Image (tube, rainbow, N blue to C red; front, side, top):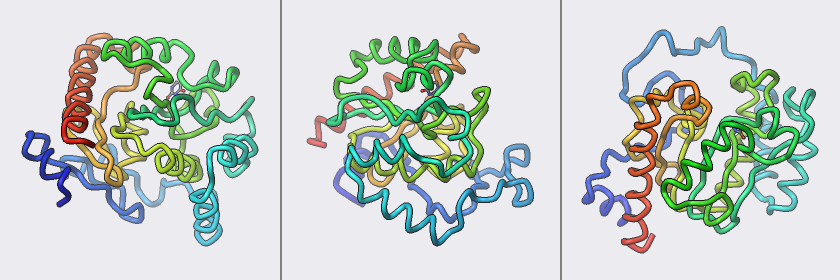
Length: 252
Ligand code: URA
């Protein structure tokens, strides 16, 4: 256990959930209970977009990229079928020295048109959520998405699309090394944690993405449809803020 882990435990932020190997089966939710309704069977799982050896080589190339090359590669990416209908790929926006990383699902129509994440209705709510905890887009905050190209009709990205795009997000996180990651909604949480996540069960807990604390809350688009859960999102943001403060207090 690292010093930071021990301090976080002392502060009552346990349990600290560990990232599973991506090779592990995605069949267990964060409470360890199997949920047949949520379990993706091997039969129904889409085939990977790219075969394993070339995928590994590609991931290694991406893992060595700086921001400029990453931006250029994402802009030109044709490694899954989301490229077919996009206007442009949307890498992310914000402070490259960010303490906070917010991760959504994928660009919508306005983001696709403007090339910036969270600029539509959900984005307005996200900006308000940031303001509620004294944060501002671009000031110690970076905003990105699991997939960089708009899924047609704003559908949830498919597993193959998420898998093809994940090396980009991994590289973004590696370059940013934020102090805290906030996963906005189930697809972001599941992609980053590599476990099946129920947001309702995961919120209020501290997870770990490769040594970076991670909290889960509702996606702003969900909150626009479920106004009563806004209070819970507020609690989650306060939890995130407290966690960040704890990290700063221990010199993280
Ligand atoms: N929803 C997301 O998940 N990301 C965006 O960029 C916009 C809407």
